[in-house]
Image (cartoon, rainbow over all chains, first blue to last red; front, side, top):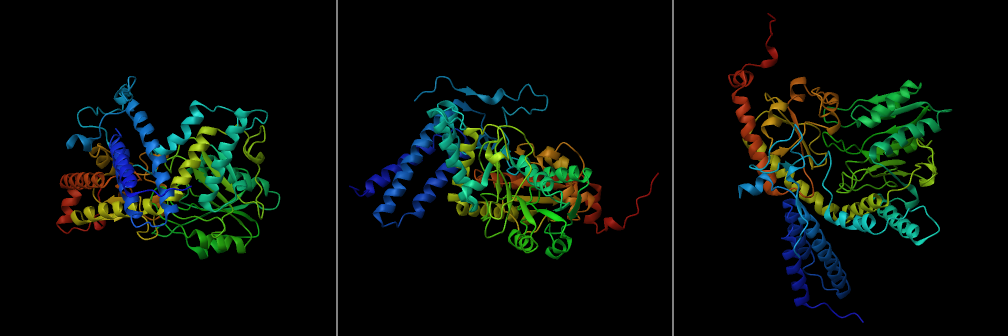
Amino acid sequence: MVSNISRPHILAIYKSLLRESQKFSNYNFRLYALRRVRDAFKEHKSLQDHKLIKKEYDFAKDNLEIIKRQVVIGEMYRTDKLVIENQQ
Amino acid sequence: MVIQASRNLSSIADNDKFSLKHEEIGRPLYFDAQATTPMDPRVLDAMLPYLVSFHGNPHSRTHTYGWESESAVEKAREQVANLIGADPKEIIFTSGATESNNISVKGVAHFYAPRKKHIVTTQIEHKCVLDSCRALEGEGFKITYLPVGPNGIINLQQLEEALTPETSLVSIMTVNNEIGVKQPIADIGAICKSKKVFFHTDAAQALGKIPLDVNKMNIDLMSISGHKIYGPKGVGALFIRRRPRVRVEPLQSGGGQERGMRSGTVPTPLVVGLGAACELAQRDMKYDHAWMEKLSQRFLDKIYSKLSHVIRNGDPEQTYPGCVNLSFAYVEGESLLMALKDVALSSGSACTSASLEPSYVLRAIGTDEDLAHSSIRFGLGRFTTLEEVEYTAEKTIRHVERLREMSPLWEMVQEGVDIKTIKWSQH
């Protein structure tokens, strides 16, 4: 049984991905993650095939777990801020 | 989750006599992607289980510990092979591109030495290829070092003319580490195939960044590095063709791992990291490449709009956009590097960055001595941001202008004196 992924599900994981990406203490990883997440959702915006949507959804879920773990590790070994962050 | 045991690593380099105090201004931006790249968090995530939980020797055949490591290594072999259109059986794991280059150049040369004692390479190869060739010369091999044009690209006719029935190997890098130029690999492969000479390419700087297919491009051996593609340091791979079979004499004696070509226990966590990095690179090659183009275009537009007498080293079209090598005339490169201390930059390869000699790559493309001394390589990567590019461009412009204002030569150029015609007298 493959249940279709609904729009609220997709929006929810999109928001979770952005929220978790925002937590990267490393400037470069943080900005990359935010950019990559936004672009991936933009790219697949018009996806209709439920199988493909499910595939992308599972991929997003895996990545959300990776981001959560890596945010923790990054936090454990953080460094000083970059010169560009201190300017802002 | 609150991390109780976190540490701030700001103090790591503080005992080092060369360190700069970053506390007030912040850590420098990283613009040296050709030297090495940071590990992608997704790569680290793939590696960690094999550093923390699964420690088995992938060559142990009698228990689960061995089997789980072996299956991880074989999955990684597939990920590497997929990226270059090879068969997993044609991939052997090594410690990095330097070792892969050594096995290729010395291994092929030694194996076919009884019949063939000639190797063709170029003047702009990485040190480890050139040094391997030097070592072979000492053993009586003949080496042809092909010149390159002012754009850094080899001449295919010259290559064809250099090949003799004595030639066993042609070794030409795909993307140059200092100036970023792309050689016509498919054309070189076709020439080598027609003359029945093995073709090796050092693809450390190209893999995962531009499409590579060992069959379409007729590549017989390819060197691969982990840490240039957001993977771990200390691991690499060598593609070595099975049909027609390429034979190499191994450099290392031992347990006969990696089909006898590279003895030594395969480091499971590193290899898993290399595999993960290859899979990511394959999935995101177009995406990352478009980002490199956007960044380098923004950077160059900014620089060219404000500064004159800036020369881009290497062909501007046949190039990898993440490597921008510029010469700022009438500015001393070392002074500019010192002034740009809040950006991590290099004037060329990391291996030779300690020497004050101008780069042999720039000399090979015919760059004037003074321009070669004023070159800086800007290395962009997956994690570089637009903000960083703008910051670096602005800083570069400001310091080049400042240094030029102090230069008497620049003053003369502004007055219309042609510096080249001056006869410098010695007192």
